Length: 199
Image (tube, rainbow, N blue to C red; front, side, top):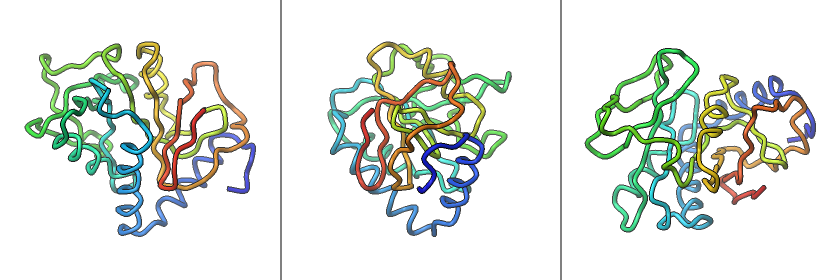
């Protein structure tokens, strides 16, 4: 991307437009590269709990279902947790995701586990979190959709948990996002179809 320093709103618009322009077959191909890259670059079998977002396919988000299905079939492999937006509209809770977990579409059309108290997973239990993003910079700061859900969530995770962004766009990290907030939680890495950037 030619822009090296820009505010989040401009970066968000540009990245969304480029991602939406990807044909379905290309989204599938790049999502498969992300799946393979996760196992290649990270110690997945060592994790006990991995948090994974469920994709909004209408917005050409990375199709994390290939990652999920591989983890369900693998041994050893971490248990999976997925987010549910709460009624306050600003916070998340997290529930175990298994092949038997019933799902329901959120108000945005995102699949979410049907909340069951016994299946709740606390942020402090997580070893790694796969984070949706549209762009990131060389310090690991990310551009998301602007709701702040993940920054609030990541701030609750234990020290040592690994935060890994997933991007379908093979861009180098930007030099700097211009309007990073004190509450923004940086990533430790960003996985793209072409490889991984560590911060």
